[in-house]
Picture (cartoon, rainbow, N blue to C red):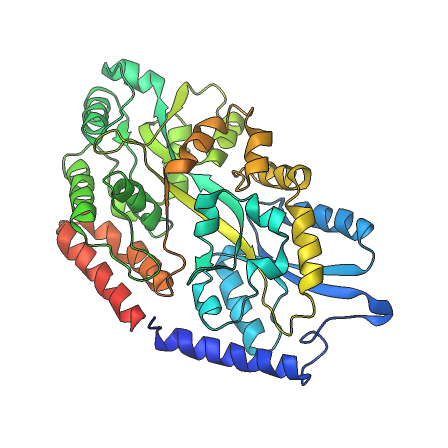
Length: 418
């Protein structure tokens, strides 16, 4: 598979640093991290999901260390905006973390920097992952990532606005969503459908629509965003915008403030996350709303699935046993479900889904996971594609043809793959 020059350069420098580690020419943190007395120290780098993320991880680590006195974990928490740059700096400085929680991983797997899942988790833990999530963690047939959290999208609808506009059925198809949104836009003082195509998460909104027409963003081998299925979906999105059934200026609309508008009762329909339920309970518990599956072209089930992962940079391999002890502990049903539910996400394990199946707030999302479509994070060109969606997709709201926009995004993806 071809890689970009940037990726190759990064990986080469990282590989060189790790080679020095394995040969014993490293600093204190670059080798086996074995302290005096035989205690193993693991470096752990994670992002912030919420204001409680750091404390949540600290609690897990404290309990783990109480049961494993021979293992110590040094935790470092960074924002999502900074974590990838922090990781790259660590790799270049021979400070690769033993445990890393991040997004795309293919470029690191391609250079042999990551430990295979079988080296860092027991077979029982690996077998417990939902197959759709486990498959998304593979590069060239080998699983490297351990799925940490899942998030699916569902259609949130305002029942009061629907009633005011004379809409009696929750939309199941694109045409029904168009008609219902049009009615709300014309007959109430609120907008019908919220379409956030700003740079916060334009790629997420877009994949929801593409998946609803049997499309996607490609796979591990090829990024493909201008297929006939994807173009048809993009053109319907543009029709929604041009006909005034969305909010004003979708190209500049970010997901978070758009969802806040829904939570305040001023938007008919929007695609939300599991965390949106908690936000409503906290900020506007009197909101009369419901949650339904994503509206698709034909009504067949499909949704956007998002997963982040835990992985391990193998370095000299001496810490793999300690990493395995931690991952097996963390993914045990009681520990894992407490962590994932506190953060407001969905579990990626079978045991976790079973344990949380009685949670009424999560059920609509859990039910959709088997039909989820994921970002092609196993493709080294995905990062460039993601950036292209965030910067270009909003142009469908400015009069530029959907075909030209998708072709421009495809060109960015193709350039990154060279």
